[in-house]
Image 1 (tube, rainbow, N blue to C red):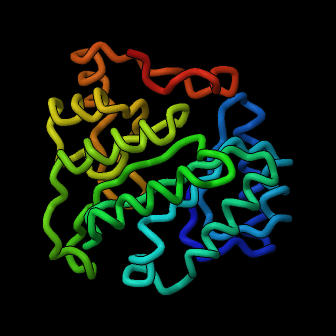
Image 2 (tube, rainbow, N blue to C red):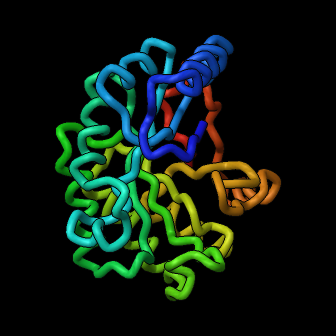
Length: 231
C-alpha cells in the first residue's frame, strides 16, 4: 500500500490506513506499506495493526542525495528506518540508479545499507524510469550490466537479504532479467503497475518464470522465511 505523503500525519487518513492494514492482515497475507516518514509512535501503531514490512528507500548515496531530493534529509530517512526497526516491522530499503550519480555514489548507498544496525530484509534495486516531462527524463537509460553489478554487490554485502529486481524491468529482455537472477536477485515486484510507472504484466512474468524454471512463493505470512523466487 502506497501513499504520496512526505510524512504520516495523525489524522483520519492514517486511521483509514491502519484499518486497511488490519483487514489485509486478518485474511492471512503479508501487509507492506510505503507512506513516507514515520515517528516511532506511528511505526508502533502500524506494527500493532499487523504490518509486515515497511518500504522507505534511501534512493542514492548521502553525498548525491541533496542533488535529487530537497523535501527531506538523509538523516530523516535513516530515522524512519530506525523507528520501523524499533517497532519490530521488517525493513524494505533500497535505491535507484540512473539519477546522474557516480559509481562511488552507488557503492556508498550499498555501503550505507549494509552498515545499518541490521541488514534490510529486502533491498529493491531500481533503474530510473524516465518519465517525459520530469526533471531527469533527459538522462541516459541505465545499462542492464549496471543493474547486474548492483544486484551482485548487494547479494555479496547482504547475503540473507531479499534483493529485489524492481523498476526498469519493462526495458529489459528476459535474458537480461535472467542474468540479474543469476547475479543474486531473488525477488521482483509483480503486477501491471509499479506504483506510478508501468511494470511487466503478470502473464509475462509467469511465462518468464516457466522459461527460466523459477517458482514464485506464496505471499502469505506463513511463508515469510522462504525466498520469493526458488531456483
